[in-house]
Length: 477
Ligand code: UDP
Image 1 (cartoon, rainbow, N blue to C red):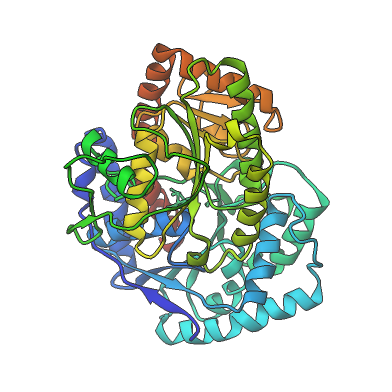
Image 2 (image 1 turned 90 degrees about the vertical axis):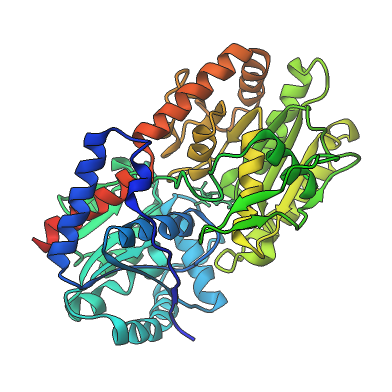
């Protein structure tokens, strides 16, 4: 079944009023109103390759609900593909990050499979797409749809969520693959200026930074009691979890309850409620460098962990639940082997948690509780377009430690709203940064408070959505 539509909610834009300055709110609302007028009943589509798992799906789910709340007919379509297609697009994903991935050629054969999988998706989409509709195509998976949709009379914008500052043969190969598909689109959106490749270095390439949804199950406020109850139920900390409900708010406004357990690789006990936690939440992807986080944590333990109570939790999605990321299972397996090679006193402090994906809101509630409970949140990626997990943690007033790579360095100002590691390979540096934050409560509190304010000012969904519509309005007008 090629291409399916994702059911979307409708959320009132007014929810943002208490969070941002009145003028900022009014400007955003006006931009959306203008889109509604310019569209005159036509649809704004967003197309990507997964409805669940990963940052893009996360953002679309909420941004489009607010667009609908502002009276825009926003819809979300997800393409279908076979494993070979996703292998190739994962290869492309790595290439645009400047890395080799599985090293397979991105030549004519790959292009043929790519085109063959997109063709039935395009055909199915054209049944619903009307001339004059607007389409945001997300990432390499959907880029190849652009020419056919434009020929059908749609206004097409390509939104690329990944990239690298470095000009490498890998990245050039990836861009050479995509260039013919995207060349004709009137606008391409990147997450950083540095990610605009030479082939697209013109005034049709613009920058929009991502955002988080402050009101979702991932980011909603949780009391300590509820946080504790959720973490204990999930097996992420030792019980008892207390009597508080393990509750979270679903997209439709109803209340859910965390019932499932995470699948955790650990030796011995789960951390106690008052043990400090160092947390990284990520897909199981080599660029997230989970192994480096474990080694950095080991360095911290050796340096300054006087009371021996701090634990590391690496959390990611249960690998059977994420369809467009075939690599996850392999990476997790390798990581488990790496974990097993640590001496027992370190193994007993490092937990590899696969969070169930059967119910995405329940999964989000677990992530929320983990991030809120963390003493430090780490994002030690080797490359990162923009790390949503970092912004999520900052919104929760957590001190963060991140690599100075890609978008992470735009999200955090070193020493002000978090700490940056100049060299992501510097594991001693990670150990030292953890020592700083965990041993200096005042520093942790200051970084955390600034982090919250930074997200409020710069990284909430309303800013992001208004920018999309400002750009679209420019094309439609
Ligand atoms: N995430 C999640 N459950 C997990 C692991 C990750 O919901 O088990 C979410 C995470 O909270 C974040 C997104 O997936 O919202 C990952 O986005 P990010 O930009 O950090 O990385 P990406 O996966 O896009 O490379």
